[in-house]
Amino acid sequence: MHGVKTVLVTGGAGYIGSHACKALRANGYTPITYDNLSTGWRDAVKFGPFVQGDLADREKLDRVFSEYRPQAVLHFAALSQVGESFEKPGLYWRNNVVGSLTLIEAAVAAGCLDFVFSSTCATYGDQDNVVLDENSPQHPANSYGSSKRAIEEILRDFRQTEGLKTVIFRYFNVAGADPETEVGEFHQPETHLIPVVLDVIRGRRPELVINGTDYDTPDGTCVRDYVHVMDLVEAHVLGLKWLEGGKPSRVFNLGTGHGFSVREVVDQCGLVTNRPVPFREGPRRVGDCSVLVSGSERAKTELGWAPRRSTLPEMISDAWKWHLDGHYEA
Ligand code: UDP
Image (cartoon, rainbow, N blue to C red):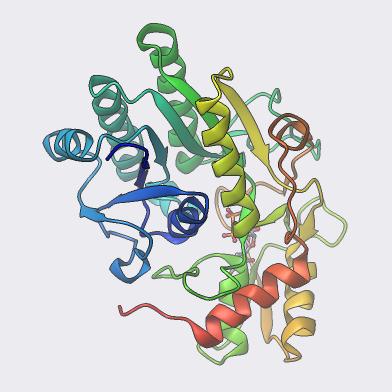
């Protein structure tokens, strides 16, 4: 349709992708969700058409590109659990890397050259407590991070030879939910810290296990930089406009620059919900880095990104609201 800006959103039925679809819709785009529902939810697709399909299915991708003629791709679809990636590297390389290569080739063949990619701070790996900016070397410590770094390299090659234009976002730890509870975070099984703590608080799990208390950090637990999912997806809209405006391919970290330890997050969850959090101290989780904090201002200065909700209390209270009010049919 003339005048309607259509965007292909892989992983649009997942946590971050579904919030991105809401933000796209609010900004005048029509998001086409392409998702195999392996970890996403049909109920989360609320803001545009849905096509159930796999990244590895080139024929289906070709059909979607020719039917909807998207002007850009936002590529969220991926397996994203650090622990699982350590146990099943083949799964991560095949799904994330081979799947993304298939998608990139389909996009190029369709002449859809604006490509926004969800990468991760896990591509940096452990770097002795330095703050990480976009020029920091990438030494991923697990297959999840390696698979994302490999996709960044594929994108680089396709930029050079096929004219692909890319915005790569390296996310730090994404948290919170849509404050209107239309969409939220729902993984099965859930492994991420804040939703796990909220499950414990609601009595859905007996206790939290803190994964390691002997890290070289102020309180011995891992430090992460948490960013609100609503702020994160706003950056994607800005990234899309960046490419629409003919700006050069660019990498942006998305984090706040402030690190919080696991213990600080747990304490804050107790304060926000006014409930106790039963926990015990367990061993380290294989593949975890001690500190991942973004040192970058680039997204703010160049994209004009202004995170508004990324305080720990706000992320936890929005996640809590979703825990209490929202749900998808499993
Ligand atoms: N974590 C924990 N107990 C849990 C879940 C997570 O101690 O039940 C820790 C995890 O080991 C890491 C931090 O919380 O140090 C953030 O983990 P999450 O899985 O949320 O995100 P990641 O940093 O792995 O992307």
